Image (tube, rainbow, N blue to C red):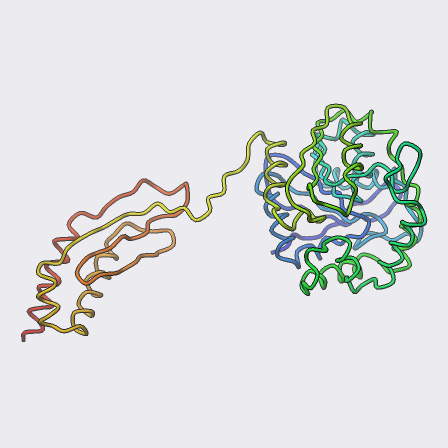
Amino acid sequence: MPPVTRYARTRDGLHIAYQTLGTGPLDLVYVPQSFAQNEHLWEHPTVARYFERLATFSRVILFDRRESGMSDHVGRPSTLEEHTDDLIAVLDAVGAERPAVLALMEGTPMAMMFAAAHPERTRALILYAPFARTTRAPGYDWAPTAEERAARFARITDDWGEGETLLEFLAPEHRGDPLLQGWLGKLQRVSHSPGTARMISDANQDLDVRGILPSIRVPTLVLRRMEHEGIDARHVRYVAGHIPGARLVELPGSESLIFLGDAEAALGEVEEFLTGARGSDAGDRVLATVLFSDVCGSTEQAARLGDRRWRACSTATTTRCGSRSPATRDGRSSRSGTGRWPPSTGPRGPSAPAGRSWRGSSRWASTRAWDCTRASAR
């Protein structure tokens, strides 16, 4: 079930929508892009699994930025300083004194501003595909020009709410995925209108946080995927190179959206950075209790009874033995052969108790088979 949405009040009287998920030992706040809506995150299973995985080792805090989603819309562009004040209001509302801050792409400038302005409220900073400036400038000549950026965003707003162009920019490997395209299209619609999207994009045309990077004095992890072409690698390396002590990790893959592709690789880096260890993936490991018995004279008895009667007798035998074997978490057992009690799966996962065996099952199976033989002779 998705988390409940609640509201925090800002110093200037606005309402900021937020959710919390998990009860882990540390707080982790996710800084979204300018277009976001918390409740919509849970409508795509892959996105939902990503946040649920974060909640295995933290209490995750989600919020909609002002002018987006379920938070108040003020009809004008907001500054990074206003956004950071909104985040403080959310943290105060949930009692998070010093959370780690996780941000993706367009959310990274706000996250860096928060960490620089409020180191006392920032446990650590995790940035995925960050950038320090939106358009080209001296010493930052790999960024698009203002005209190139405006043309690109015009394409996105022309089909705002359809998701097709956004899918092309953010996840070209997933062209033709109707579920993802539909999810992105609805995300656009529930975040804000095309006009509001254009207004915010125009306001961010000269966004530049290069000057604050050296003042970030919290542990910082910078992530990117090596074949990711949506954001030039020089953006990411510039950020990592100008934040003191930042650690850059380049992961395999090309997806722009962190929850697509090998999401666990990035999640593992985040978890290890924050906790010092990666959670083990139990996968499909099984602790099994193996029971084996041989029904006396099974071949001869099967020949005398015939296949149908012998199968019924054998099934009754293994069912009776299975009911007397150790209790299992998922109740699974397997049966095969004509006169033998095969392996029975026991409790699954690393927390299962040590294996046990039910003594006497072989003798009981032989007795039961003899009873079947006597009954068939009558």
